[in-house]
Image 1: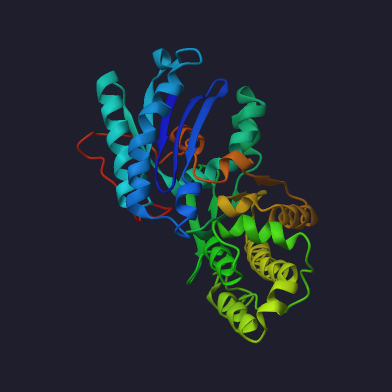
Image 2: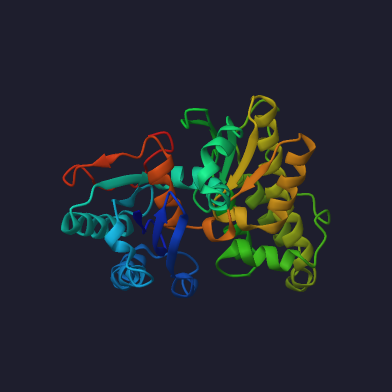
Length: 344
């Protein structure tokens, strides 16, 4: 039984995972309402909220069936993320593990996202998970969030290799900034998706930032600039009237870049499955178009469950079990690593 703590940004989360039966429980405290007033995450406020929320969450995780008695290890996110936020989670996990005499496992937040699409597969049949997973490897994954957009592979030994990332803005950051330009507020991605439902995705021609066919890197800064120039040429009344079309076209430009680069990477690989994870993976249009593209090349799309797309402790607990790089560390050794790479 693994107890996991996640506190890398603006979600405080705890999870209990049993490799023999699956997730025993998940507890999350979101800070969206707090940071919405400021139009983005305020690190000092986020750290304070983690400090206040983590103790009560840990107590909640004890109540269902006293699974704490069965714990064999404690897992915690040690990077990447906001330094102050990570420090709260690492300190709590250290104290808990030390008091209980349990080994402490440090988990890379991005690697947690990388393996998160396999959680649902494990939940369906823990006993046959290894066999079913092996049939899906090697695997091509796309992590798309507010801070990261990258492609990677997982080989048959479950080792990760980075293929590409973004040269400037992450996709989620581009959506958040686009929403701000359109006056929609924070968090931008879900708001753009909501407004886009009533618009035409081909109403405006925004750049895709695709580049050469064999170049797998992403770029979204030009898209954001294009939206700003487009809005400057319109009156405030026109922007309001065309808001659904602007949102739909802007969102589609982001999705096209993500899907095309992913499929270009797939064509250059021998992968047997495609994965989608990270906060932006909760976008329904993106999930639908990725699924259609995977179907055309006759491989399964493994998309992280909505509850596991954002920052969550379930993927940290699962990562501590499935990721070969996640190993017990000494209490004195474990610090925080705000910019820890995916392949570290």
